[in-house]
Length: 182
Image 1 (cartoon, one colour):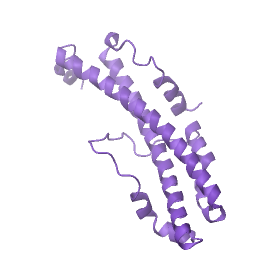
Image 2 (cartoon, one colour):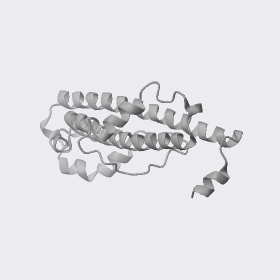
Image 3 (cartoon, helix red, strand yellow):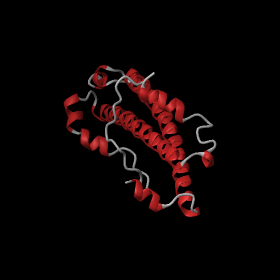
């Protein structure tokens, strides 16, 4: 089991947030940091899956309109394909601590590559429409599961942040103590 896999197994258990009121502020901050780190990795995997899915859909659309499409043509339009995906939801979002986390050897990354890896993307022209649609279905299923994990991590981050804010509001923690630590 890799670091991300073990992190998710630990962070996504139902009782992970039990007993927050009894935990120290440092423990809660550490829990939040762990969740944020895992969320960055899961978000990266989700973006990889969405990108591969966008490429397959674009290839299918062009094949439908033009017949067999040269991969070079698709590569030439890659920036347009990637930016034409579903719109981002409104809101401030979250700034990741790392843009491309270390994903090597993770079960989720391996699972994504088992559906379609980067080498297979270069062989789209060799696949039938049925094969491409099956790949798109598998990628959609993978992306939905990873998105669910991401939402669960966001929920945990929000609850942990809420507990931290609550402690400052109620006097359970002070800004002076925070500044003295720095």
